[in-house]
Length: 390
Image (tube, rainbow, N blue to C red; front, top):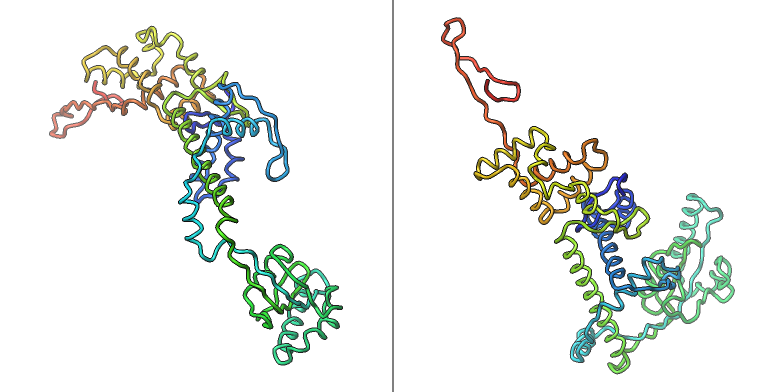
């Protein structure tokens, strides 16, 4: 990833290209929030893959809930979580409480008998759809006055094969008809017409509810196992979230040692910390020599800090580097990696970023020398362009 723009999230290096793609999966009020969520998701993937690597876990891809085969990384994460995350079974009183707190829940679905008249548009365009809606409204007006004509109109007007049976759809349960039709029928009383036709891809439906058998509440014994399973699934999800949070916290507490490639695979060989440590080289052993690699304005910062602490500049530089490597946040690491990526003087730029992160920039003191110009009374300032005195 040395030549790829990257950012650091929770101590994990993430390519900007992968981050941009992941952002599309995270709805947020702002792009910055979506970026944070995407970065966290990719960092979580990296720490999970790294944990699976540490434990030597192997897994074969399986079909997921959508019928698609998992990737190798998805299979590893699934197997890791199944081995590492456990959730306690819910207590019996919690299961019972869920049942008692929902007196209108845990019922068998209602059984409906309904009829409809389908008014299909002649063509697939907006004008035809508008004309079909007008014809459906006319049918509703007629049926409002003469409801007993429903079956006869269905036989002569409906574009559905059920028209030959007077529009009867028979007994219906959830899933037998489109959700929009089911919801409209649930709102009706037996013998009642829907106030407005319901539109589907097939056209406009004039609906009538013929009969309803409401669902009955199931005994606790019949649903206890289902409730327990739902509570266990919820508890496991929370436990998995806490597990991931712990891994991310651990990764954030140490210098970045993980990276994820543009293809979403784990990278451990050329991570930010390995590149930075390799670049610093002998700086740790000989910080005095490293002072010569500093840019002049950065050296001023070190000298000013050394003067205030009454210690050697090399000691200040060494402390600044060590503090950065152990305490720097993700944003600071992102700055280091960004500067190293295209730098022509990587060591100087690396040290500058670390020093600037540890100490506020010390501005040079401007020295004023007051002189008399031509014997006149007006004082003038003299000094160097950088604000220092002569």
